[in-house]
Image (cartoon, rainbow, N blue to C red; front, side, top):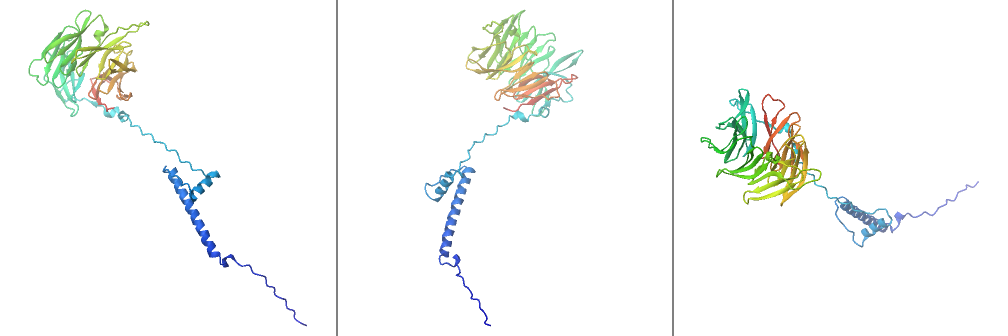
Length: 421
């Protein structure tokens, strides 16, 4: 039997692309295309980062593959490069120096040496970083303010001036580098206004004027002294004395007027005081004027005020006053001297019992607490500790001083230095 043999079929084998002679060329073309595409997308990415993150404007060239790719994305609404808006950051506001003011840490008590046996104090005034105040002790059944003490705010040392009253009390002592002036008062009112050349206490004081009734509050500026004094049953006079020449002049007179009880104020050779205004109102309101005289020109100016003015004080630019006689009904006002009038008058606080002006603030007391209002920033801060009951005594040269009346076993003088606005 014959063996059968199956014929082997051979199929035609397909030729692979890799075996083609064109493959190296094709791979080169694909590589070039891929490299160009990668370069284009890399460039586009860098531009987007520059514009969105660093806000650097990088306009695309009008021609070329980058422009075509960007246009394609834009036309197909796939990617539209929009620079992120740049907002100018707002500067951080500088906090007011009083923001960090801690009354309990900042207040300083005036402590006397043990050899000075005085327990009652009053009427402080400032000059050159030093504070002058009267001091007293109990004589019989009464307190007599029989000493003048000078306190150095830098060294916190206290010196008793070698001056003694010829009458009973030292009232309203004021001083500067050249002069020391005080009222040598009687116990029932009246006395003598006396002046020393500061430091020359080995001679008798100059008697400026004899006072027959009341205890006028003294104001000193340079060699000018000013006060209002009751000189008759219903008459008060505003005096100014040139201490250099000892010449005293009457600036104004008040007859049966409450303005005769309003103290004047003097600073930088300028004097101000309150007087009756000329305006009238149907509702019965009072009008006042704040009168101002510059000693270099002797010209008097009137600043009209819609309301009653009592005890005006000023620092050369700003004027402060209250509209009642130091009661809980008093409102504190502040105005700025501008030309021939007062501008930007503001009502600062109600129920103000007392106040004192300084160069860049006014200090005032409400309900046995002390506050300061800054003219520049128009901000108000409490400066007496919450735990204390205090009575404002004065302000000057960046200091505010009060009496701590939390306990009345003895007088406690305390003061703070106010940071500048």
